[in-house]
Length: 386
Image (cartoon, rainbow, N blue to C red; front, side, top):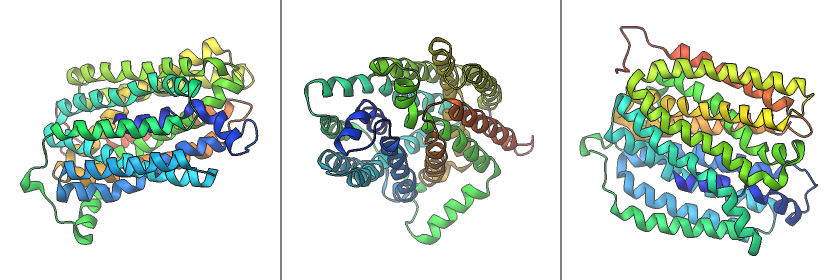
């Protein structure tokens, strides 16, 4: 999970360098595509990695993913044009997908129900703790090395994780091994789509992911240009990311006490309230709100994601535990692929005002809540037990 997160957040301070290196206009939103294309690479390659992980085991797919990850990082460091850089960002994302599929499949192999949600929250805490230090790390590296050094650092980190992963044990049970062919894969994916609980929670996660991608693609422009705090960007981004980590750790405790369904309902309603407040704050500031009011409120809203996203992931996989690799792949691919497209489109509209950002946030969070309630099973169908 740290591999995937590092590939996102360490490059954020380099957006100005990217503009300069590839002769882009000042304030161009083109560097934001480095995030969108990375997510696209992660998204759709999971559709292949999932069935492979159900056929050949988790560890082999992890090793393949790390190797592709290293190819993507190396190619990004050596890219001579923006198009070449975007191509290798997609490849990089493909590699990150292998690690991401394995991480969630292993959790489903080992745990169930609310205990699984707690474990998912702890893993997500790793994913969101990386952004606390990654932008500062990237800025530090660029302080005395060329900006491409951030890509070389990711390559080194991948090598370390590759060596460390030898200590892990295979978690796929022999009786859950699936044949890798079109008929089996289609059958597995069909089960996921036809399961109302799984499908509805996946749709909810797509809209939540859209807000996350939207924030990542325009946070440098939002904090640096619109709010005028460019020199403080790594610190501000890290503080907001720290709120994610706190939320993830708290969720691991709260979900054990109250259960997945109750936490999802309550957190989604609170998310809508927070998004509405963000909209009011922004409109009162004519699109450029007060920094000391907007950023703390944004941190509260985003931290609430950690009471929803890990639980959505868990709730979607519970009915399809025997095909955890394929199910994790399809739900995650849908979330990241469509979330990246939606978030990227809306994020590209953020240029001199935060109004498009907060309107998009409110719309997407309301849709998230809608599908959480649609997913609620009847008493007879209930599969999520305390």
